[in-house]
Length: 335
Image 1: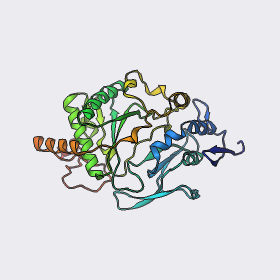
Image 2: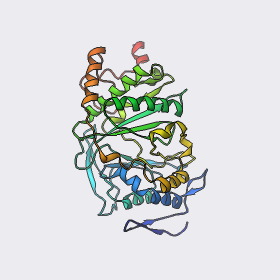
Image 3: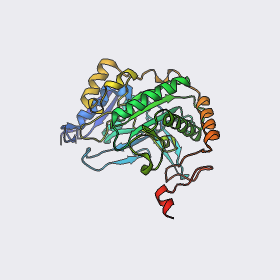
Image 4: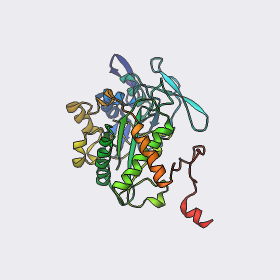
C-alpha cells in the first residue's frame, strides 16, 4: 500500500491512509479517487450535512467487502467536529457526529465512509425535523422513468400547497424529493404529512403509485415510503456515493432535468465534472422554509373521509397510538 497522504481542506489538513486501496473494482476507482471526488463536491456535500446528526456507512475494504453503519461518533474524532445526542425509538441514544465544515466530510471518507445518512434535524433541535423527505421507490416491474412520472405529479401537488420540493436521484433506481420546513413539528407530524402526500398521489395516479407498507400489496407501482420520515430512518445525502459497481452518486437535479436523466449518468466522474461546471444546484434549498399546516389538514380530511388514519410503522418501532395491525395481510387471512 502507498504511504498516507495529506489533503488540504478549507484550512485543515486531513490525513488519507492507504490511498491506492481499490474501492470500486469494476471501475478501478481507489480511495484516493473517492477522496478527490469528495474534495470537488465538499461544499455541496456539507450543505446537505451541516449541523445534522449523521450516520456513516463505512466500507473499509471498498464496495466488494463488508460494510457497516456507524451511528456513534468514532473514537479519535477531532475536537473541531461536534456531536449531538439522538434518541432512538428503543429509548437508547447515541452521540452522532454533526459536520460543520468540509474537512469533516474528508475525515469520514478516510474512515471508509462512502454514504452519509443525516437525520432530518439539526443538532440544536433534534426533536423537530426541518426537512420533509419523500422517497419514491420503484417496485419490481417499474423503473426510474416511473419514478420520474410520480415525481412530476408530486411537484404539481406540492405547488398546490405552496411548497417547494428539491429532487435528487437516490443513486439507485429511485428519486428523493426534499421539502425544507420550519422546525415546529414532531417526527409524527412530518410522517403524517408524507402519508397525506402518498394517499393523494395514489388518487391522482391510480395503479401507478402506492402507500401500501406490505410488499405483497404494492404490485408494480412506485412506493411512497412514508416511513422514511419515522424517527431513526435516514436517506442517503446529496453527493453520497452508493455501493453499486458503477460508483453512482445521489445527485441533486433541477426539475426540468428529470425527463432526460438516468441514474447511471451520475457517477464519481460525471458528478465531479457537473459540480465543477454548475456548482450545487440545490444551494438555495435552505433559503426558505415552509409550513406543514396544509398537508396536516389534508391528512385529517383523508382520515375523516376514509376512516383510515395511521399506517404501519417499521417493525423496530414501538406500537403507536392509532396504528393499524402490523400483521402481513396474507398471514392475517391464514389465522
